[in-house]
Length: 201
Figure 1 (cartoon, rainbow, N blue to C red):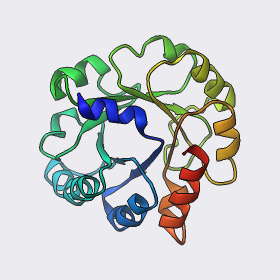
Figure 2 (figure 1 turned 60 degrees about the vertical axis):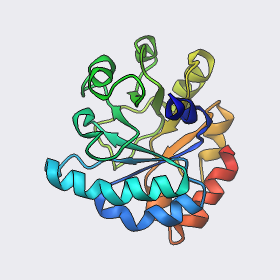
Figure 3 (figure 1 turned 45 degrees about the horizontal axis):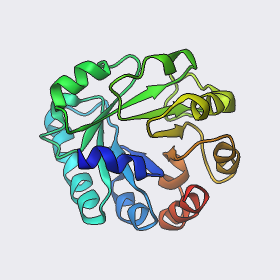
């Protein structure tokens, strides 16, 4: 339950693949609160191995570690919870696997989907298009405003967010943001994280 409460205090969420582990330390120093390991191509045993530095770094920095789409591997990966999409396991199915105390997050792409979030501990609300998740359907700032008006659990705006547009996303009502490239591809990931954190801090 403690970790589920902590997600409500989080503001900056970073999504990485296993090969991006070198970004972990500087990003966490810069103020990342939650790290998700999203690596759909790795076999189970390799995913568990890839998760080890993620779990270790997040514990060292007091951040939450979330595994994408694999509730069955949360325990083996030392994760605090799982994130599922609209085409993955349902929130109820994920909860049945990870148990009552682990975190379960859910992706939202349309306003209609905001009506079916029961059981989720937090949401990832898709704002803009992004090459890191080409199958996502961005809802734009209108979806951010709808979430701000209707959602009572923690949530993060995600999708194409960077330093150039984070201000308007926060102004539209997002309490937190999730990013990939804005930190992963930055010349100085720690500085990029710190600047993003300043906008949502």
